[in-house]
Image 1 (cartoon, one colour):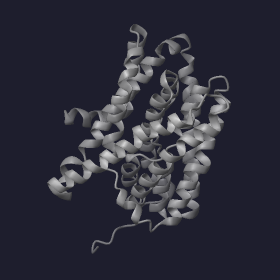
Image 2 (tube, helix red, strand yellow):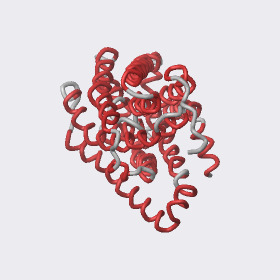
Image 3 (cartoon, one colour):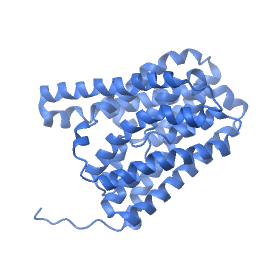
Length: 327
């Protein structure tokens, strides 16, 4: 099973479109309404494993406050409003699609923030701290951003969103940290790092694919009636990622050394689309499936863009400094 999940995780660029197609075929052929009951189990499967590997102790080592401050300023003062503006421009008559774009821009960082930063030769410890801070701040801020920005066009139940954040983020966070503690006590830090830590992201991948399938199945009939909507959704998503990459690259080059700049790029461009999916599918009922479709398509663009940026990082920031063999 683990080999199959590892295969899928390494090929998310292919696996997610395949699940979108399968979900569309299923939704056209069968009433997808009952799938709504699977949303919460798949949400837990998606979010809980992510929380096991989250290192909350990194919050006590904020030695790079300037880098962290600039990163979170971009994350919470620029990107959400850019996503909101694009949503208003492209979806003035489709507020649920605009909500999906906003959610895609609200919760920063994912586990892949750390991985991509490492592959590009960036500051991995800083990326770890960005991931922890971004996730916690994003979970707390999301209900209020949605209420303030979308409350005029959608019926936003702030208390319900807060409750769902507790169920789909804070509860898995508590259980994940407890699991981490128990496993480290049982097998030791080395055993956890080598045997268990690599497995949890694989389970999260299974949850992501399940939610993507459900979101597409629930939207299949609407897409069948207006297939051009799929392309219309992709345009603002592509613009959002292009703008974010450009802004973060410029800020990184102007203010930070190479390693910190790369961490800043991946700490801002990479969004926690898993949490965004969970909020869309759990906090807004069946209407949230349209928002979830936008987020699901965001996975395809985000993974592809992050991979290409690794290849371009040396051209953008210069080659990494050679390491001293004596250190």
